[in-house]
Image (cartoon, rainbow, N blue to C red; front, side, top):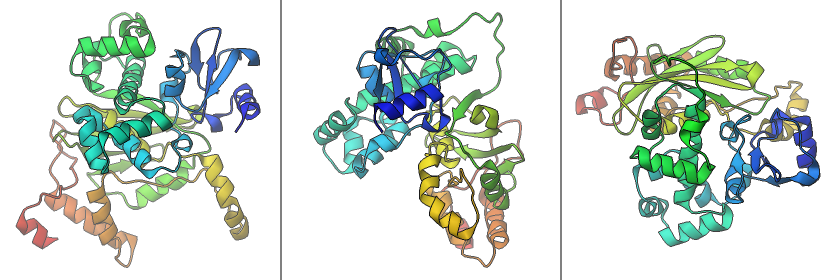
Length: 367
């Protein structure tokens, strides 16, 4: 894409390009998504960036109206470097919240110095700064979409203290967390967290819902015409559940999250996006699938690739999926969850968690 393509996309406010590039306005010092509802600035007053962090490094701050932090993630700018892709994915999942840059480099099989050079050359910043920027953007979403206290938001975003959170927020976004909060009278304390996750249309929710419903495991998952949900377990031992309601008029999902103990929800949100394949570029995928679909006479724009929660669950489902029918495999997975899955802690004891790899020898022999 060149500047002419960027201009056409932003003037048309085309949702298909949401997250693929960002528009920075020189006269205001703000960068926006191409679908921002604000009046379109003149072309001579704008410049374009492939990533939000590139716009931030150039001195622009995010728009409070279109909220660039809520745009679907774009994989196109990450290039073909598999090490970089894996590093970005691990950081997005909270690797630098739980550990250090050296530990991340060791996990990738490279030195921390080379990891820093890779990020500077490709992303334009250090791994730690990239991680902090993602944490700040996530905190910004929580500030604008939830009623959580600022202290809870700081901890939920992976910061160890409110002071560190305030300093980082001011340095990155050039504003204070409290300035994003508008007076709304008495705040109501609702259980859990509610967020909105966007996608680039088209999105074939009907096909994805049918796939999930066919393989639905009672007590572990629930699905209906407009929503899907399930229980989950985190690496720190915490557990919870989420429900995602499809909102086609807004091109996204409204997600409700509940935890049985205080936890950082950022890795959970990333996993939900992967499970529902929200970050896919449907236009590019459909263009590649068009010749095959034309030959078969079936056009299904917006097809998405369903995900699973973690590698262990995916492996168990894949092994049991070698049965003669999907129903037979589904019944076996149900049996495993019913016999070895723990009940989700809390007042609602009807939902179970998928078993962990640390099963007893008796349970392993039974499998």
